[in-house]
Length: 83
Image (cartoon, rainbow, N blue to C red; front, side):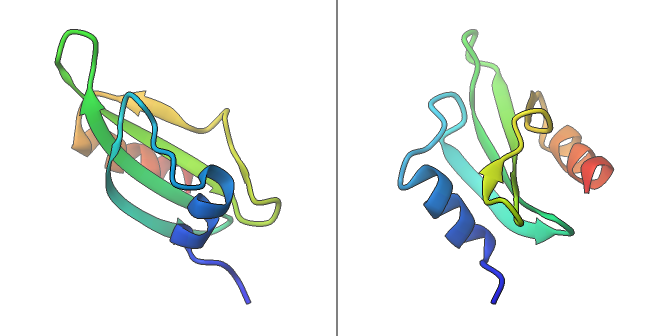
């Protein structure tokens, strides 16, 4: 049985969160990836959003695909672009 996004993120990261974007907004599965969109504050207190991908087959983070953006809309657009 295929693991859920929450199960994959727990396996890869445990209970740790990204120090820059610690607030998880949503997680899900699209195609070969589990994804997470999270939010936080940049060094100048500007809102930032992280888009993180885990490869479902290898259960490892896709560092080359994960990125930071400056709006939730941009995060959602990037999610659609990648998956």
